[in-house]
Length: 220
Image (cartoon, rainbow, N blue to C red; front, top):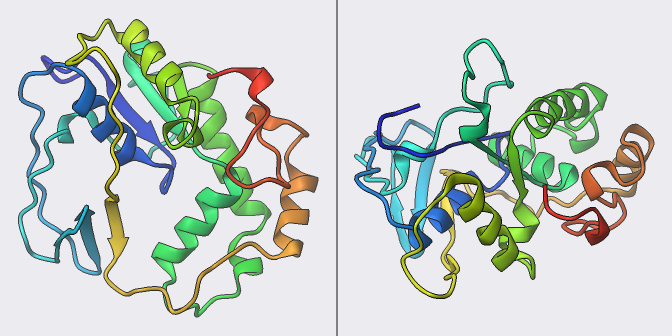
């Protein structure tokens, strides 16, 4: 852990990492968390109506929360109680990953989102959700937002800035410098694949209802 940073955020790509980090930064008291990466070729970073392009230096106020997208590994994660993982509906996560890696639609989505990629996602998610604190992307944009922030405060003993929780309303995160040429939505065939691969109610998600899940399972 970085000295002075009470938690680190891990995720599978395209799961709402910066939304989570920005939400925590906005609502709790911290010392310096700034990082200053240089935008890499082919990518851009967006906060609200401001965009940073390749080669520009970016100042991320919550940057020290962030780590990488590696698999969970107990040999280097000596303090799993200090890790916060964010998970997103698997279909939405993989569609978003397809959008950013193939904005010009050069590959068939039904080939891109196959069993190998689903196994990769499941291994990534299982490693963290079985060992660390975790939250859902859907909770950060839905009705469970306050309960999610309550749990994060409890888990990491954080000091709130205000009496009520504020939401991050602006778009925030990494995007392809090339705008997707079409809106990429899962086909019935892709949805069928996910229903056959993932057990019913896996992590509370319904493969027929994108972005929603069975709330009876609670928040991870």
